[in-house]
Image 1 (cartoon, rainbow, N blue to C red):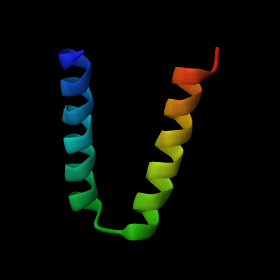
Image 2: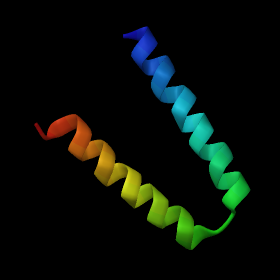
Image 3: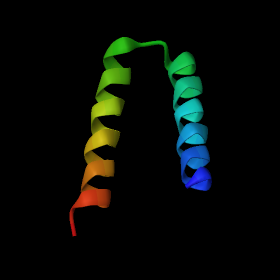
Image 4: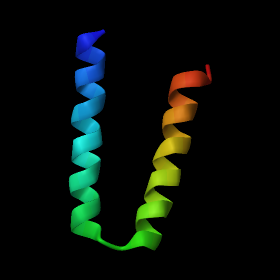
Length: 46
């Protein structure tokens, strides 16, 4: 469980760094929605 939490926190940090580079709210929201959709489909759908 610790490894999964560490993995998730690592990628959250990478995402936050990416948003610092983009610094455009519109594209940030579009990318977040797209990645949430992809993640949901990969994790929950079979």
